[in-house]
Length: 356
Ligand SMILES: *Cc1c(COP(=O)(O)O)cnc(C)c1O
Image (cartoon, rainbow, N blue to C red; front, side, top):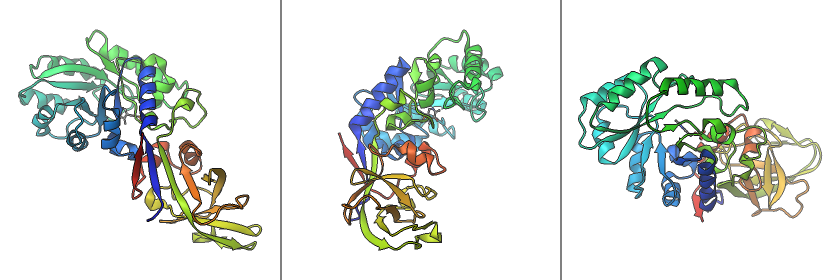
């Protein structure tokens, strides 16, 4: 069997969830959209179900998968419903929905439901992606409040630049939110992972941590709080071939790496079809049998190559960690023109193996 795999540490996931919840100071929806950022949504949600206040996914299809897996906790649809036809299903499956556009308010007014639905009413406080403008927010809130089939209304918004320390835009978004929602009763929700870690003044009743649950910092620079997160995924494989090359020999596609001296090269069963970033540069860190090493040469679809200089004991069968406890995913990100989010979401083909 091909040795490439992703180990998923569910105890680390629970540790990170507790940390997110503590930082938020209230309740927290564990964001498990996009198959829990590549970690397997059903297994991650089951591991958290005894302590999570609820879950958040992008769409109703993702919510159904969690309900089928036996998740009973609240599940919020972060993109809301795409069509009014979804409303009866939302109620039937006990889901909560974001409302981010006037047409969705109209749809709720036109569609009587047999049970009240919980709504998270989204304000566009400056990200300008989805959400009601400040001028429309109060009116939408009052129209929803008047409907017998709308239960609680949580006021929510989303930050565009919370991963930039001291960025004034985040304070401006916060002020816009407070102005637009002033006097409207009910709970609020603002914080994603970077806001939880970096913007204590954005705390509210509900937090929505995603990336930090998986133990990866959203910040490019060091952050003392993020350093307490525990990596959930370890992506690993093994050396499947070793060759001794003289000086001046190219390695892999496009000869991106050429040996400067006689060099032992190890070939790892891991490639971009597994989600390893194709554009990771020469020198991207790896761990070979637990010791620091480096990627050399261009990453192929199924294989990549590492420099075995200084790894005299390493040979075919040696374990290679691509990221995890020994190689922080953030370091791989820094070497590969990608983001921590995309790095994790890209993982595929490799079997996910759960511990904890
Ligand atoms: C994805 C998402 C989150 C989680 O963001 P992270 O940065 O991964 O913590 C929170 N809120 C909304 C609306 C989202 O779409």
